[in-house]
Length: 194
Image (tube, rainbow, N blue to C red; front, top):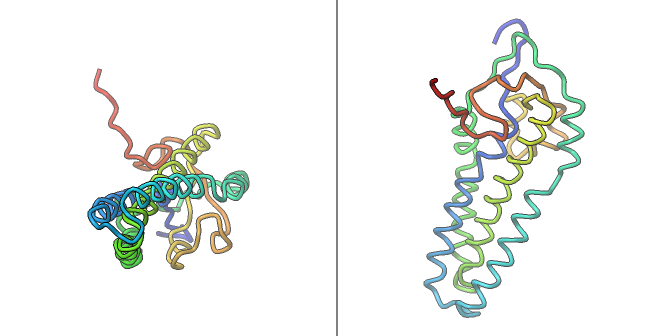
């Protein structure tokens, strides 16, 4: 970075970075937890887990949408000297910074299986699905505005600072073709050869 440029990470990529680990850890915890009879029994545990899955997915997917919209509307254009962080680097940094929290969540989901089988794992998996849905919604927002949303990397280092919280003072925007991630944070597909 030179001349006052900032390192920028894609908002949708940061949101999406936690989706896969939460989904897989939740699926493993739910599958393992279903093997334990628990205090409530498997049937009640799985039904309670299914309800928790749906509630968690909805709460995570729809939470803070107004703040995301407001931040997107007031976003400033990225400067010429701003450095756009690669998708793989953003995902790796998020997962590395949250690995202990992911491990604790996984162990907690496994531990709850002795009381309510599979429920904790399904709750964790629901959070992962909710993050994936939120990233897809951000992608639709980006397509509608024809501008990708970015956030300063140094603001992400403040622990669990939410992307629509006080620690993040604003977003930056670039054209829809900038960076190596498509709207919504997925890998950008290579153009087909004609």
